Each structure stands twice: as structure tokens, then as C-alpha cells.
Image (cartoon, rainbow, N blue to C red; front, side):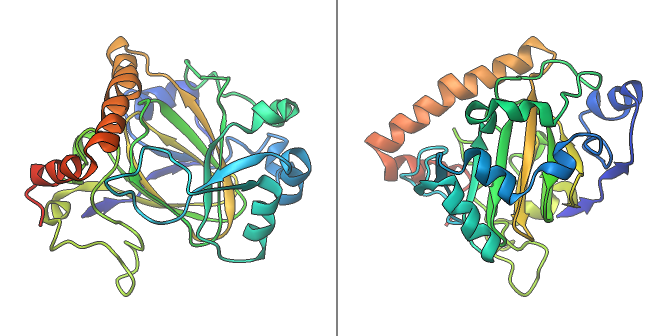
Amino acid sequence: MHLDSVDTVESISPAEFREKYYEPKKPVIIRKLAERWPAYQRWNWNYFKEAVGKVEVGVYNNTKSDAYTPINKADDYMLFGHYLDMVKQGPVGLRIFLFNILHHAPELTHDFTWPDTLMKGFVKKFPMLFVGGQGSVTHMHFDIDMSHILHTQFVGRKRVLLFPFEEQYNLYRKPWEVLSFANFEKYYDPGHSKLDLSKYPALNKARGFDLTLDHGDTLFMPAGYWHHMEYLDSGFALSLRALQDSFSGKLKGVWNLVGMRNIDTLMKKTAPVWWYNRKRDHYQLP
């Protein structure tokens, strides 16, 4: 893989953001975007436990999906407060994603500000919280709705691998899914990496970005960007989603949600092994 560093700025004007990053669909880290938010100082484990600790949430382990796994199917369910207690105590390979915390605690809307000056189209009903224990992994995928993302990290560090959407074939995208066949876990650690370049040789041609997010860092991920994330420490992040300006971009998101996902789910229920093998045959994988 050919990996570059991501541009990092302390702050940025709306005009510069659109010219250098939004329009060319290039990622950037903005270090101080969230610094003035009350959440920057206020959000911690105890704060969330008090606010939504009694809400039941789906949790996800590090196992990659197989022929039978529908998109976004949780591996288990537990109270959010119980999960947070586990995460605080040490490494745990469980994570929570797409948790609309404001649905359960609307008062938290006062803890951050929507950055409408940077871009329009924010889906303000769905700010999503992502939580992970140290060692938990979000496997390589792109977001199904094809939205732009501002992903702000709170507490702990997160290692992130990014690729433009156009790298999908070098990344061995599963047909009819948003996932990759390849396992990128510990890609940065030669002694423990699960990335098999002999099995997936096209990965050698893939061009992307490697970065680490720390407390308060906001990553702009343009629509369709592939991303693999690993929690170096237990932590959580807030994702603010914005629809693409173009009609074609919005249409791709609708197709993925309504067409592609439903067809894939149906096939996984009716002919899972045949469907999975057909996808592997696309790349002539062993």
C-alpha cells in the first residue's frame, strides 16, 4: 500500500476548506474545530453514564462478517452504562457505532455546534456516537449513505486508515456490500498484522492515508471514503453527517440503502453460501 499523511490544520476558513478539501474530496484533520464546544471538556465516561446509562445498546466484536451476517447486525446487547464500565477498566474488543445519543438525551445538543459555515446538508436528526474499548476494530468499509463526515475524537487515540472510494477494487470490495474481503487489523504492526498481501495482491497498488486521531481532533472524511479504525485506547467519537451537494451523490446513497442493502440481505437469507462464493469468484479468491 502507498500511504500518505493527512493534512493537519489548527483551524480553517470556510472558503479554504471548500477549495482545498471539500470540492476535491480530500481528507483533512482540523485540530481546534471542537475546542470551543462544551463537549470538549464535559464529555467523559461518567457524563455519558449518567445521561444514558440505562439505555440498551447493540455492541459489536472484532470478528469480520461472514456469509450470513446482515449489514450492521449487533453481536450482543447490554445497558450502555454496563458497557462503559467494561470499557473503562481495560482492553475490551467491543464497540458501539451509529448510536444516536441525542435521541435519548436531547439536552446534549447544547454541548456542540453544527459547523454549518464549512458545509451544508447536515442531517441534524442523526448525530452519531461511536464508542470502543482499547483493541476494538472497525473493519474496512465505506458509509452506505455516501455522506460527508466530520468525525471528532473524544478521549483516547484512534488509528485510522483511509482510501478514496475509487480504490474499491484494489481493496477487494465485496460486491453488493460496503465491506472489504481483506482484514486490515494491526496493519501498522508487522509482527501482528492480519493483512495478507499474498492473498490480496492488488492491495500493493492501493493509495490512501494513515493517521492517528487524538482528543479534540476532527477528521473530514469525504463522501464514499473507505476507512478502517482501531482504538489504541478506549475512547469515543462524534460523527456529524452531511449529504452531498449533487443529486447524483444523494441518489447513490439512496440506492445503497434501499436497493443494494435489501438485495444483499435477501440473498444472505435465501442462499448465503452460494451468494458469498459468487462474490469471492469476482476476484477469483481461493
